[in-house]
Length: 134
Length: 88
Image 1 (cartoon, rainbow over the protein chains, first blue to last red):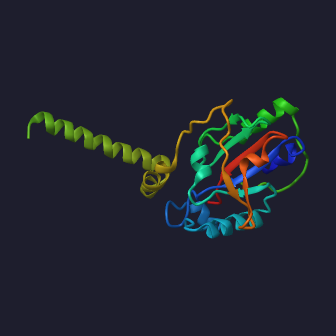
Image 2: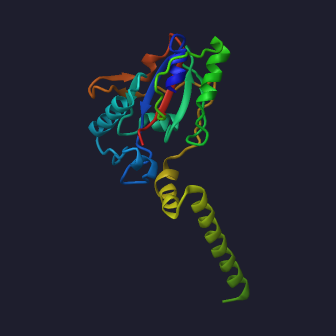
Image 3: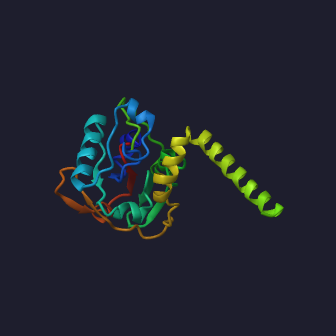
């Protein structure tokens, strides 16, 4: 998504929303996360969510604007967001694109396609490192 | 127990074993099947939002841990790409 952000940030706004962890150490931990030293328990407080979100942004040098879901998972529930999902909201506040449920139907290229259809294909030659998540 | 019930229960058991083995293969291991069923499935929802519908407004917290804002505040001027996810 960082690549798409770099390509289209002059045309569209972006917002990353941190929701409850998908593979925390105290639930369904993945070997790949252990290998990459991304090991966090499921946050029980909002402060813990804030800490993990900041870890992510700093470790990945993540440039996109960021928001954090409340502990009542309001954003997650409203958008059926967990574990990962993509949307585009148009200028009138309507859903313009509703992505499929992640991880299997999480497809950033569909977002790129929507933006390319509206603004034309854009590909920066920037070598900005693109973290895999979110 | 009648022959019918023995056959039914045996078939059901065989299907459960086959489903577990199949899921273990797909998910990676029996532990992953447990994780999928226990932790993932209860939180995964196909979703009911479709193109053209009003985008729900929700209140979010900034990375500073104290500033709150509404998703709606970020919409209006240009299309807003919203990326939901977590670190793990």
